[in-house]
Length: 169
Image (cartoon, rainbow, N blue to C red; front, side, top):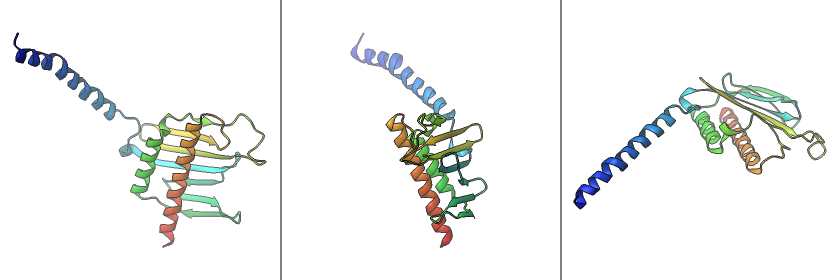
C-alpha cells in the first residue's frame, strides 16, 4: 500500500468517524441543555436573618421589598431588563448554580457572630425546569461552593441596586 493510500485509509476510518461522533454528541448535548435562556421565565430572590426572608424580589411581577437602613420595609415595583436577566442567567451558569445542592444549611445553630445567620433563597424558573437553592451564610461546607454562592448573591444584589438606580433617574 502506498503512503498516500495509508493516509486516506487513516482519514476515512478514524478521523472522519471521530469528527462525526463529536458533532453528533455535542450537538445533542447543546440541544438538550436543561437551562437555556430562551426558556427562561423568571427568578425569585429572598433573603433575611434566620428564617425570616423578608427581603424579596420576583422578576415575573417586579415586586421588590426590602428593609432599608432604618429598618423600614420598602415596597416598590422594579422590572429588570432582558440584558439584566441574561447577565444573571450567564453568571449563574458560570458559577455552576445548576449543580448546587438545593439546601446548603449549617448544622450548627449557635448563630453567626452572636446573631442569626442570613439565609438566601434563589430560584430560577424555566419552561421545563426550575432550580431552587436555600443558602445559609454560616454554611460550613466546601469553600468553593460557599464562594460561588456568595458571588452569585453579590451579583444579584448588584443588578437589583443598578436597576433601582436607573429607576430613580
